[in-house]
Image 1 (spheres, one colour):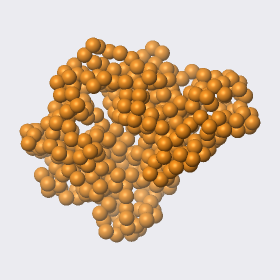
Image 2 (cartoon, rainbow over the protein chains, first blue to last red):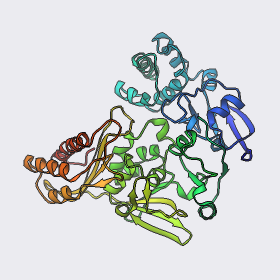
Image 3 (cartoon, rainbow over the protein chains, first blue to last red):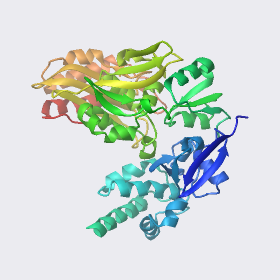
Length: 161
Length: 290
């Protein structure tokens, strides 16, 4: 068995010092070591997007990132952005538009949507569809998810106008 | 699935990486963005003893103009390239191709150097590097050497890199005022591997193209140039008859490999469709277009 590797990182604003096996990917670390079960694992080879988390301010595939690669870094998960309220409008819009059924993809979908509404505030519907093409949903058929994200883009535009 | 156990090391210098590659040979794998390696580890298609994380090496980062070339550090991510003003100005083909690569979360991690070194024949960057007439910069125990893209991709997932060499950067000639390029690919869903894709560059003089490089992805074991069609189009005015002739030439010179869902004939047809769409943009454009 490979040696444990010490890491220091900040998760949802809280500093952690841990030792991990090098083979442990970021979402297994978040779920099993830190008990943050909001990030999900679907395919574990980078296709489904359920594991989407923020590392150093950018969304990444948590299953395609080793926990040791987050050493010295900052991680935000669905728990962090829910508690801080920064995606409250997205969460409300998902509920209002019925943009989830089983909810398995929703945390990853919200993490992806967060970066979209922050970085592309003028995105159109086609750009929203393209952006979330990396996140699979097997329940909704995507239409309601796109509606919800477009609602929030519109609301935020009006709020800053 | 979960990756098998491996040891992990994060060297601070290129020399340390080379020493590790010499010591461990094929038991070691380099980790950059990890967007291919991590998937193969999780599926246990790859079970290295040692993973060498090169992301701590600062000199492998960055995008800069160095004399007559644009230097793209091995660790530049797809997102870095997509939004780099230097890339937009000096190698606009790369900016046009970037959005076709997978999805945002993957573009935030995956690297240019990783894609070139992995040499997937269906990937965008190897095809673009070849179309741009770029150069790979490699460092090994004997020092640095440069390998032309034309000589770099030697077979399926195979390159001219030696086992103890590290790809440190790629260099791309700066686009001149007469630079023309095109990029297009056909995929069932955005971000999927393309069935067929095409990157092309040339110098545009009047209504003719010179020094064409037309490169296809997804048709062969490596990105492949359509040299017969390049020659046919050289310095010719791009009227409809010439375009039709070029499409026929392309379809006759390529010998596509099938994939799980597409036959060689389908790919041959689609490659012609891409060229048929792309060439007229050179005839009508007043500036370079995607």
